[in-house]
Image (cartoon, rainbow, N blue to C red):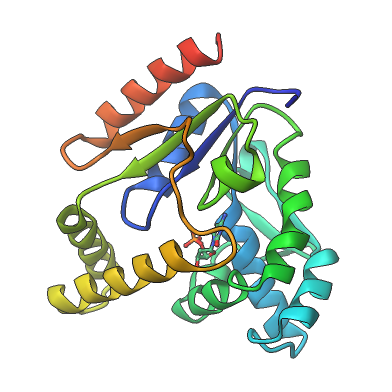
Length: 225
Ligand code: DC
């Protein structure tokens, strides 16, 4: 049994997961555990220690002693690695690539499992990732799987890139998304999958406000808030 209310949010890139998870956590006054930030921090930590993103066993050993800390309260959203702020350093395209590579190793996933469970036990929280409802917290009392149509997801990604000043062709964006989906859905360890008992929620035709209103209402009923 989990000691506090927990909401697991999973789904593919572009479904609006990060934005929705953050806004929902804020609305409910819950802590947000962004598990992607853990994989990203491990990729950065490996780089700092000269460990290759292809070396599963050594990455597993690093993961065991990953000195990660998430900011709380006023520091909400901040990520620290060995007490150094890495909040923005873990969002570069290079570290994104590294995170995707390190997250594919079974040794890494096994080692980070306990850390994710520990962090989600510290208070009421929204836990966002790819395998939260299926592997990390199979007992979560509320699981949400966010999706959106491939067109909408590609458009969102395109907008996000443009906002960052990155020029990209729409068809390239769509192709990269299909490739990432294929990798996420077919990887041997913890593939992206909707848990049988998850609420499947399509964000394609809803505004963020509507999505949060709906999910907060579901959470209040299911978690007796
Ligand atoms: O959600 P994100 O883009 O910050 O995730 C970074 C990488 O980590 C991404 O390649 C997917 C991976 N990841 C994962 O495999 N399992 C999770 N629970 C969270 C993220």
